[in-house]
Amino acid sequence: MSETLKVTEVTTPSSGGCACGGHDDDTPVLDVRPIPHAIRHAAVFGAFDAIPEGWSLVIIAPHRPLPLLAQLAERAPIDVEYLVEGPEAWHVKITRLQQH
Image (cartoon, rainbow, N blue to C red; front, side, top):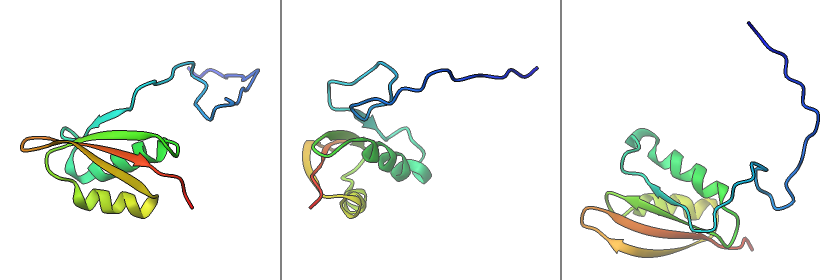
């Protein structure tokens, strides 16, 4: 059985959000350790692309993520702060800097 949906009103959020009514006040944390290695970088790219300039994302990785950080720096200027430096987990705060 199929159903036809009709959109009666479309709202565009003024703040660039998704209009779901929810919001995050804290820096999002993404633990990449349970994500399969084959898609781990893509998952981080998606999360990174979702944060605006000036905002940060903390990732939790099983090792120092130097190749990933280099790839992110190619996408946009970043600032990197190591919050926890291993040995089992690395907590890395990545801030998207303003494009020049």
